[in-house]
Length: 445
Image (cartoon, rainbow, N blue to C red; front, side):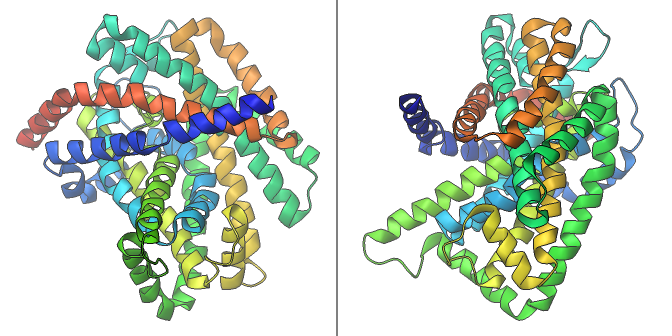
């Protein structure tokens, strides 16, 4: 087992290495330019479309608004709190700038994923609209590429149980135990019951819960972080300057160390940005494929807001709070660094904000990824797998809350990266379809 864990660590370093990160960022840049910066130009109108999307018209199971909230429920999680802190601790403040750049170009990736998800979705045997990378690979690239879609579905099914279930349940149990002294067993039991109550209801119930919890928790987190930044507004300018200067010329570096530190900023900034907003991984289009709409471009514009909200808003708030606290180079890492920073900014309350945020964000991630994994499993085995999958999903929650998950995390991390490769291949090959639909929609405005 130790040998397997060592091998997985090496494999994780390879699949999340320079080639994958350059491919992820490069695809976003290519799509942004190919779309003539549509995702930047239409950012304001995207929020208007999101507001209109509270009802939705056309075929689908949930409204466009609910589709985005479901996608956000899966992306807003431990990466926004612990992941940002890890990026700063390992890559320095400059990693934040690379997270921002990843998100700015990742908006085009997320847009293209949703456009293709609507364009190439299909109805399953239960009459539900299903889609995502495995379907736009099969229906867009042709049936001879179905094997590539099956690979994506396989990687997604396995990754879901780790990154979207057991790791999240463990984060909830740890957060409640460290701040509220709740035993892991109690956390696991309650979380299992809540998960069952939602997941067994399918996508409609998941979407309803996500539409209530995600905006509420996001706004609460924004208010708490915003209060800290207001109280430390004199340090805010210095924090932004530190981010920019550290991204290219870290002052602490000397001689030949500079290049290595800059690479760490790029590596951890891009990796944690992708881990947080999942642009390019192919998960979010599975949710957007269920939206009640017949307009791929409108749903794409709504979908890209997921990357904007997740990284450019929530991750940025976490990063700035950590930097203005002055604790970023004290040796702490992960959730403990975020907790210490919030506690410094809001003494007596900050730790509870982070604990509650981690708990709710991780719970909604469990809900969102349950749907992603279910749709991947359905692609491989048909609709007969849906109920067994849901039961397995519920059963994995207490295991995650109680277990030691180093190996689970490693396997999920590798599978998460492997999801990106089939998806990025499809995005590049099908990019002319995205460009054509987008330009036709622009001409019709």
